[in-house]
Image (cartoon, rainbow over all chains, first blue to last red; front, side):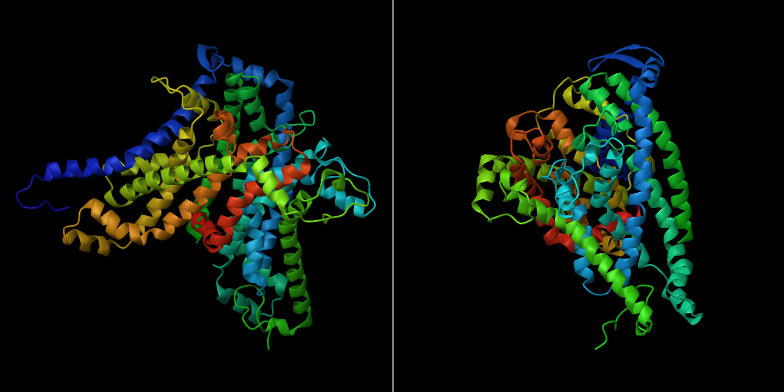
Length: 301
Length: 296
């Protein structure tokens, strides 16, 4: 900025910086206390003993040893991967199909978009309660009501330890699928029409056009979403806490829920921090990969 | 009349639709959407209808989806008996405070980082960007400790909405969203105002703010919806009865003495704010997903 004649340019510069900083300061203070400081202290304190929520003495890797020795730990690692597995099987393909179909169907387009998105507009705590009631193990639940219409016996749903993770993932998919489909739908708007026309000239049918034009256009975004979903589902905690409280018999306890239980139920926060750091180390690998890919996808577009 | 006159977006074209196989394919896709939408919509209707049944009716053989009679007075009964007005007041206090904190703190920071660019802007942006990516899996316990016993100053913020509002203000994603939006506002307009002698604040209120109504709306709606629905932190930090929010009420519903029909109608009351916001701002919300999708 050119200094006005006669005024002190340096003083102006400082004043300008100060007022600009004053606007940023509240955000910086909040981010420091909410994100940065917990991140750093959480990592450091995972090497310390704690009494209640008071930091005690340095204990090295003791907390980590105790977590790994806990029989629940191996079980929750397995469960967490089960969540990720089912979310890839169920939660990943449905939004892709939905977006492609939404993009093809011209009738009632706005109505369809409204209802497809609708579950995503509901808060997760309400959706989990809704599905908890739908999965109700006796005849009061919607799914058992439907089964009884077909003359079948009621099923225990969430109380079946073999499938409880899958049922939780289904309710999560119902919740988040619409918003993801709309992202993909937006990505589809960017397909170059000329490519379709060229494919048409070559006499390509629907599947051929999908494979050679639509899919290559979406694949980058799809991969990004897949990794984002893996990162998100890997740290899942609120959904099982609400629907099953980790049960039956620990069958739906995820790593995130285990950390919560250490932190706030059995009040051994040092163990919660150790679990948090272990999760961080696994997730940071995915996160780096995500950003490497994100850059690649952006460079391509 | 051609049913398929304007197929200009997808894989299928108007010309394709003359062929029978594409007509069938279209019909299949249409039915698929119809079924999917029913899956989205039916659980909520079921909750509504079942809420009007009494408990005996729920377990009646043969079971029926429809209740014997729709007693609308039951809605009023549940509302007053469960004291929903109290939950609404506290939830709206929490949510509107969060929206204000988010929009004001992140909006100002985004404006400054985009337009005023003080010394250190690059560093701040880099730090914010890295923070946004960091998995926060070890943050819960230290955050809880900060809010119950603030470092060095030793005050306790639990049993108030301050922790929720502070967390809403620390929304790194929104800071960057605002910054990106302000980056897109034409420089010429601002330079013209500067030539006319307008100060920073004047530029902000006279030029930037009117042009940024869309982004403020989008961020507000999403912040409101996100905040109305939260339960985890209120559950951890707030035990005062008159500060109980809808999410916590829902979370506690399972272990409450209320019968299933009451639980169902309570669930409906709890989603009502979001459903209304979604019905009014559906274009904004569905479109806003894409604003966030550009970088995120």
